[in-house]
Structure formats: C-alpha cells, structure tokens
Image (cartoon, rainbow, N blue to C red):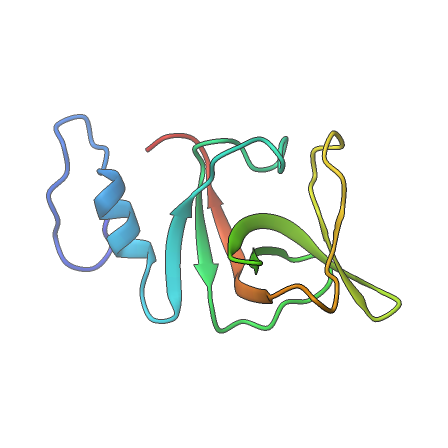
Length: 117
C-alpha cells in the first residue's frame, strides 16, 4: 500500500504491477521481472527485483550484469582478480568474465518481490 500519496487500489486490496514498480523505482532504482530458474531457490521465475544502478557491487551481491549484450541475474564474486558470476541453482555453471568480454554491471539487487503481483 502507498505510504505517501493516495493511489488506486483494487477492491481486494492489491496493487497492480505498474503501481508496485512506480512506488519502488525512484531515484537510481529500477524494477525488472526475472525469467528463468538459474537463481532458484532464492529468486524464482516471475519475481520482481528492485535494482540500484549506482551502487558498487561487492562480492556476494546479486547483480544484473550485461555480458556481450546479454543480461543475466547472478551472484557477483571475485577470485584472484577475476570476476565470476554464479547461479544459485547448481545445475548452472559459473560464468568467468574474460578480458575480451564486453562486461558491465547494470545494478545491484536491493530487494526481491516474490511471486506474481
């Protein structure tokens, strides 16, 4: 529910996805919806992620990364000066960022909004 200005809420007391995004995504933040199972069990397909694109990633943070123009949600790690992106689902392999990769951290995940809203 909005704590600031009044907003339209459906009769069952829920807010639309657009309303949730508008209330969460302020300043240097944006909201994205997860597709896939690589971050299960912590992050599920369909969850919304609140992301800050100005926050500096620290090892262990969940990040949105662009690797050669492909976006991924992964755990950010550093090992021996190299960047490693890890899924929490063990069926996916680590991604080690090579010097030839075009790599960018597009934000650090601040909050997970579970389930379809």
